[in-house]
Length: 274
Image (cartoon, rainbow, N blue to C red; front, side):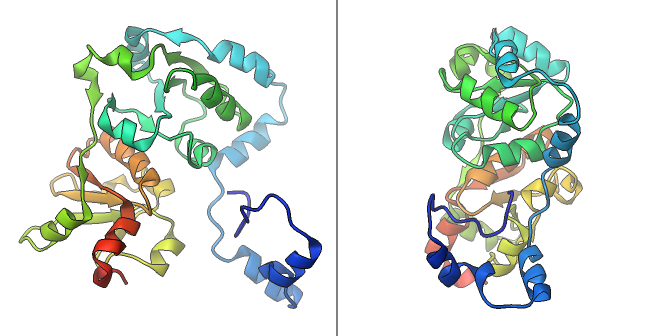
């Protein structure tokens, strides 16, 4: 999120950059400026938050982790959530969808964790982590690196601690692209919501879908109907799992997550992608 068209390569050479880097090609200063700023994603809110925090005296990350790595019993987590704490589930989307604490966020450690945590979480509200046992420290550390040192603890034992608390657990409804295609042919078809970035949506999309980028979903929640079936998708599933947690928090229990995202839809029904 800190640049445009970033490479996944760890090393390169000046010769390779001169030959292949889009920004190193011959152009005027005005052309370069227009190229670099085109289709830039919105800066996450934590950029400003961190800039403000950097002007203040703060505890070190090690000090923050000592306070954050506090095992909490299930009852304590439930109580903290009632009092306004954000429950952040950092497991893989498939695990979250199978069973999760009601009204929790899912931002998996394997994806763009810091970016989405900085976009979606309230920097002023306490955070409780739900993780696979042994990964709590990684989650707290990565949150601390972006200035989110308001972690009060983690669910001791992970989701297994909620095995007897069925009243506070939920599962995410999932649907295959083939079944979505069948439902779209019905008299009252579902609304398909694409939570990818706007530029991704412009390049390729399911015909008739509505684009609400994930980083704007909370502020545009009113556009998601509560009285009609909704199908959510991203490119492969990571962002859609995050979106499903947000929708659940806002009472949109009529939503389902399309398995495999746009990639799976395109593979099964390429003629419906424009």
